[in-house]
Length: 545
Image (cartoon, rainbow, N blue to C red):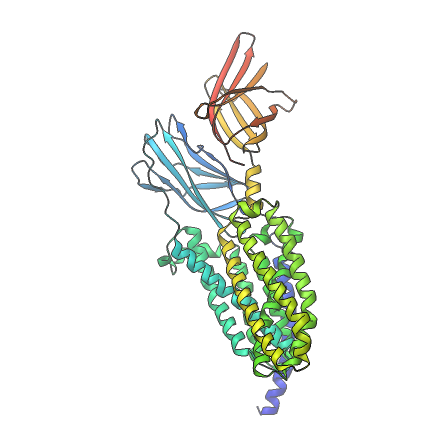
């Protein structure tokens, strides 16, 4: 084949590959935006059975963990009073509850039920609950301190991934659409893409380690990668790798293919971010996933153009004026999309202003907002003060603009660092969902038993729902039921409230105020007949608001 035929073949391939890249990216974006069909939040524990701190007369046949959203168990462990550990491998998923079989008869003393699960937004959640058989003993050691080495590795890998998606893919798009024939900054963009190609798979492997609670030394083990592949984060990595590959194609491929592959890569950045994470998993899905998609593509457009533009102004100031003019005209609507989508997502995640101060997620958001305010102010000065003289050829202003763009880059990198920190903080939205869940206990005696639920399960104004039965699970037609709550360790004497029976088979106590969180003694006085009152009681844990 001669050179002319080869050139013709490349042009012909370009005509077909370009539209295919567009079609593939669009289908991938729609697929990610459309699935999963259900909406999930960052899961939080609602209740355990046995309850945390409970003292049981005998060994339970099973344990249950109830969450605010469905989860997938990763590691379930029972720590015996002597500190030895028993892996719990037999469990069932029942909607939002994990039912765990107890394989042995437990001895007297305090045990720890330790759990680590992954929520559908891709983030692992862990915790533990103490309970005792017979009488409490010294609590065994359970769990480990935070593995800061692993957390640091996760944070760094996420920064590499962000650099590839935003600086690399966004830079490739800027070179293809804004820079014309000028290729200043191409090496920087290629380096950012390589950072992303390293950060993406490493982030996935570290996700598996974090899910298992395993140390960094187990990074190469099959179990870690199997766990990682079972999380939703795998879709973010896969689509992100496609974006990075398309961006590299736009740098090294035929000229006719550059704009198409760069555009497809930019679309894949938004799709990758919408595939997993706190924001994309929030309700309502029809709104949050498209907003994450728009937010991600807008970030990539803006952040990616900065380095190539700054390098072009420094190295080829006369030829860079076209690049600057195109960027200046395009950036206003992009910033509008970026700001609007970010504000709506922040409102959905935070829900109330107090959460900005009282939660780690909110404090990180405040730091990000402060950096963004500085960034927007600097960008506004560049746009309305420096751009016009720089386009006119004022070399001194061009040098000032190059320095200002450098500062913008530093702020953008700081914002990426803050955003990577969200990986370790559940959003206030998820905490509010957990707080709104009821706390429940089952009281079982020979004469009667009851299921008592308090909604919401935290201190403040609540409602109690009571279902009563005989000791052998038969119906119990009581004449009257009274709920009695007391907290002797806090000096709170019994709070007595008569229950009403609305006709659905339950007894209710409305407008009940529980003044403080903690462990309360709950007693039910059940009037079976005019001459018989059955009293049953058990502790119930009320969460802080």
